[in-house]
Structures are given as C-alpha cells and as structure tokens.
Length: 470
Length: 169
Image (tube, rainbow over all chains, first blue to last red; front, side, top):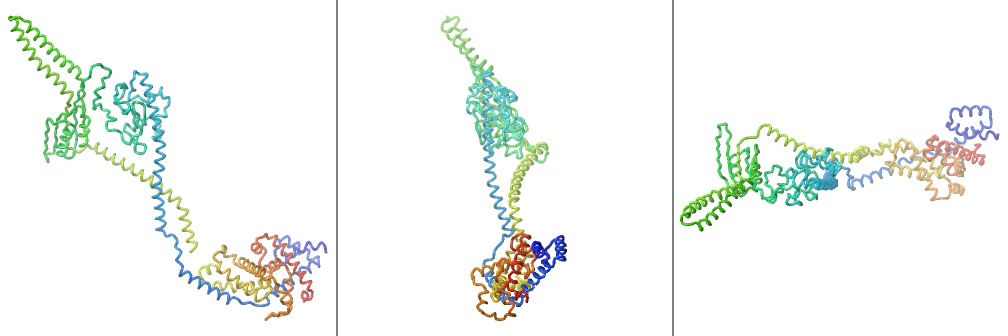
C-alpha cells in the first residue's frame, strides 16, 4: 500500500485525462494489478460526481437580471456618448497639414544648420588663404620683392607652403588645387609697386577662372600685405585682368622718370534696339567725364541689313575701364580692344624740344644784347625764328599730354541678335540656372522625404490603430 | 461572439451569459457557500466582464478570463465577509429552496476545504477546464496544476471520508 501512494498522483491525472501516453499505459497496467489503487480511482471519480452534483444541483438563471443591468449600462453608456464630445482621430488632411508644418519647419531649420557648417568651411578656407599669402610673401622675399607668375603661382609657391591641401577650399569638391586664382594684373609685379598693399586683392576664390562665392554667398580673398578676409562681394575692379585700367600714377616699375602711358580702346556691341543703345552709349561717354567726337547711326528696316552706329569719343584715361563696362552693359560684346601706349619717349622728346627752344631763345636774347649794330639784325632774325619754333614745340608737348589725358574710344553698335553659338550659350546658361534651382529644389524634396519617412511610422501607427478600432 | 458584443450586440452577450451562467454560479456557490450570494457574485462578475470586455486581449480566452474575474469577485467578497456559510448552516438557517439535505451537508463539508483547493476543484470539475487552461488562469505551470489538483482531490477525499455517511451515501 505504501508503494501505491506514489501511484495516487498519476492516477489523479489519469482520472482527469491529463496523462502522457506512456504514463497512461503504466497506470492502466498498475490498476489491473492493484485493487487498492482501483479503489482510489473509483473513489475520486465518485467524489467528483458528488462534488458536481452538490454544486450544480440547483439551476440558476441570472441571465435576465444580468442582461437587464447590461442593457441599462449600455443605454447609460450611449447616453454619455451622446453628451460627450466625439473623440476625433486625426484626419488625412490634418495629417498632411502636420507633415507640411514639420517640413516647413525643417526647411527653415536646415539652412541654419547648413549655414553653420558653411561657416566652419569658410574659416578653414580663410586659413588656407592666409597661408598662401604667407607663402607669397616668402616667395617675394626670394625674388626681389616680386609676386609669382599668375599662371604658375601654385607651383611656384610649393617650395614655400609645402602643402598641397591649402590650395583646395574645403567646400570645393575636386582635389585639383584650383580653388583659388591669382589676379593676373599682379602677375610678377613688385610688391613695392603696389600702392596700397592692405587693399589690393592678390588671390580670390575661383572656379574655372570665374570668381566663386562659395561661403554663405561670399568668398575669401587674400590681400597683398598677407591678410585674408571674407567678402560678400568682390570690388568691381578687383579682378580687372585686361590691363585696361591704367596703373596708379605712382607705379613706375622702378624707373626714376615718370612713365607716360596712354590708352585707346574700341569695342563692338550687339544690341536689340539700336536707338536706345546709341543714346545710352553717348550717355556713357558723358557720364565718365568724356565727350563724343562723332556719332553716326544708320538704320534701314526691311533692307535685311542690320542697323548700326559708330560712336567715337574721348574719356579721361582713368575712365576707360568704366566707360567700356558701361558700353558692355548695352548688349552682347562682340569685340573689345584696348591699346596701351608708352609715350614716355615722345613726351621726353617734346619736352626737351621745348626746353631747348626756350634755352635757345634765352641765348639769342643775350646775344642780341651784346651784339653790335651790324650783328643785331642777324640776331633779331635768329631770335624770331627760335621764337617761332617754340610754339610747335609746345604743341608737341601738348599733343602728348592730350594723348595721355584723354583716351579715344570707338564703339560700334550693331543691331543684331547674338549668333547661334551665343544663343546656345544663353540656353546653356538658362539650363545651368535651371539645374541649379532644380538641385536646390531636389535637396528640399529630399529633406521633405526624410521628414516624411520620420513621420511614416506615426502615420502607419495611426492608420493601423484606426483600422483596428473599426 | 465577443467581437459581436464589442460592436454593440447585447444579444450576443446574452448568449454568452446563458452559456456560462450555470458553471459560474456553481463555482461562486462552491467558493462562497451560499446560493443567493453565489448568484449575486456571478452576476457581478458578468457585469464586470461586460464593462471591461474591450480590454480582453484574446477573445478566445473569454471563459478563462471570465472565471478569473469571478474568482477575484468571490475572493473580495470572502475577504469582506469572513463568516463562513457553514456557521450559518450550523445555526440552522434553512436554505429556501434546498433540493436535498445531503446537498446542504455536502456543501458544508466542501466549505471546510482550503480556498485554493476549492478553486482548483471548481475549475476542474465544474468548469471542466483542462490543466492547461487552469495553469493559464492561475499563472502557474501545468505540472504545478497537476500536483495541486492531486492535493485538492486528496483533501476532498479526506473531507468526505471524515463525513463518512455522506461519502458512502
């Protein structure tokens, strides 16, 4: 019997039908042999019957009362629902509005981030510029105060900077040491010939030879005295590379005498409306302190020949650049020429002529005083001749001075559409600007998409939750 | 069925009540020992279930869930009113519509069992839940249920054997 106690638990499970198959076989085998355990099984089954009968003897019916209360409750509930403000879930429109708001906020915030990132690049770039200018200073010390050649300056400076990285702006994607350009005007120029070192830009940021405003709409430039600075806009004449702006009067390239330099210029401008352009061109001459020598215009509509005009005028030498710029603004510049001329020799010759003539007159006057009666006549004649030479000599000086003071500009204005290649350039420019704005738009769209992605789980969650509730 | 109720179909809930009320009342009766109270408790359990039906995660487990609620309701009731039904019967208060004397006596015998054993016996015999369901309801393992069931049966056997006349009758 004692051994049977260990069978009671499996038999209990057997009675409940919760044995494993092996256990069931074992229990059944044991029950066949053991009358005591059979009795135990019968007893617990009998107990179960008694138990069940005792408790389920009376039929209860609470469904009516339960359902009465339940209906009451649901009626109350629906009454409360009526008075309660409906719980509103987000509608699609609201969701879209929320996304849009987030996107707009993102679009506002993103440029701020971009700006601060750009600021960091800008200061890196400025450091590059300063190092380059330091290298330039060292180069100048070794080369008799001369700046390097504007075409080979990057290579020229390598022995001094010993760093190729500094020739790349951190903003510039290519690694080709061409982020900066040197102002051609100062190619090989002696530093001492530059009148204002602290205001003379030597290098600037460039891309394909054009000024590149890479940093927050501005660029870093290096000045001749070695300092660097961020500029929102380059000064208009900073990069004048054609030499059309005469050097400052002080510049004399180490010569003791003053150089006498004269300029003339010519240009051909194609415009859409001839009359307007001619008037504007004449205006340009006057505005730059000059005057028009001749202005001719010929226009024959319907003849197939383009209307054209030719304006010749004089402007002060210092105003050549400004005048040409104003003329160029009229339309498409098809041709532009500048002639510089060194009139030093001519001036010196003419001035010497005047001095000599004056000296001769002076000598002749002395001689006339000392001369006797017989020689006096001859002296008078010589003096008169010398005096008559003075005028032309002075004219010669004046002529040179006039050449120096005033430059002749000949502007040819033609009523003509730009050539197809020019149109292509126009289309190319338009296409470029379109691409650039598309790029900006694309960046914006990408950010919108990113914000959308961030919101996607939320949106999905809301949608799934609503589905689930339904 | 539960989903239908959640959609506002109260008739479906009536079906549920009809299906489970017998077992529920029997279980409440077994736990608290008094038929009237058992009806009240079962009703309370059904109402509570109705109220919190939306919180039922697995509608298929409605039965186990309902009996879990009933169990809690009964326990609350018992903790609030400690005097056991046995003492009432001992005072000779007659049950209004007791079908048979032995049933009353049997119940007083059953009331001597531990609450834990009573719960297990009720779940197994009245609700005819298998061990797995009981394990889910009580939050214990199936083996644990099996052992506890065995102990409860032993206790029942002992109680019935102590009241030999009823056991044999």
